[in-house]
Amino acid sequence: MYCKIIDPRTHGKQAYQNTGSVVRTINYLVKEAKKDGHEPQFFTVTQDGIGADEIKQAIDRNSKGLRKEQAKFYSLVISPNARELDVIGNDLEKLKAYTRARMEHYAQNFALPAGKRLQSADLVWGAILHQERTYRGTDQAVTAGSAKVGERREGLQTHVHILVSARDATRKITLNPQGPKKRFDMIEWQNSGPAHFAQQFGPPDLAGQLRTFGFPTVNELRNGVKEAIARAQQRRQRERAESSAGEQRRIQHIADRVGEMNQRLAPEQRLETDRITQIGQQRSYDKTFYSRLARLEQRVEAGVPVDNAYFLLRTGREREEASTIGRGMGALLRQIVQNERDINRYRTQDIGERHNRDKGEIDLY
Image (cartoon, rainbow, N blue to C red):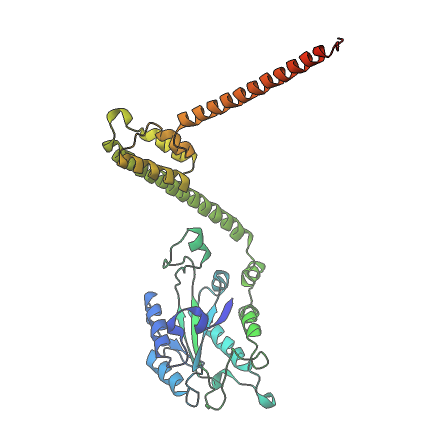
């Protein structure tokens, strides 16, 4: 059971702005109810089948005395989960009865001076049932790719929208559920929803009790696992298909670019699409590969020979031959320098020996 108050500052829908007339919000709720294929009707603490205009007038008239910037009404949502709806057989009358009990608790949750407590009949409110929901961009199924924004959710989705005036029926007490906790305990009202549901529709067996309090049964667990596996398989198949389609687009893109270059090249210099594609695959089609491919296209357009095209794409260097020659010349120069050092060392040694002989010194070996 999920109970909340919609904050128009964070919800993002203009329809829930509550500092003015309730007309826009009611029109939005009526429009959404019509999507369910049902005639939109409101209900209150004592009546069913009330028209939208009557609710509009009742709430708008009750805002007298509030400042312009103050909230004139609040939007509440009561949303049972699928297990709870299953417990009551998705019975709309039972859900209305539960809503009336929740609004009784809502009224009594206000702490007024001298210990005064309100009842639901002291409030001005109207509620409407919606039986469908659609996926939003923040839903897990959408981010996982198993559903699209705006698609109808599967299973039982019945929930209740409530519009309640920011003043009591006498227009003497301002009622702000988003004010200080000591005046209205929002967390308590939200969290008490499941317990009140269990008190009102106590399940006759353990399976029903498990469903009521949110615990899955063995069959539900088994079915849930099967559904999760099926969704995972579908997701993998979709990812593989998308990956394959992406690979084909890249291959075709490279083939088009190589074809344009080959139109400018002489027959003996034309490039092989497969070799270039293979280089791209080895580099995972990264930015560096496409940057080098663009350099190659610039050379072709400028009429520069492209004998080293594949080496350029693999390494980013202009010429393999130049690099080899450079390494060879470097080795040759190092060898020449070493030889020159050896020659100088031999010459120095020879001069020393001659000098010793001239002085009459004899080297003994």
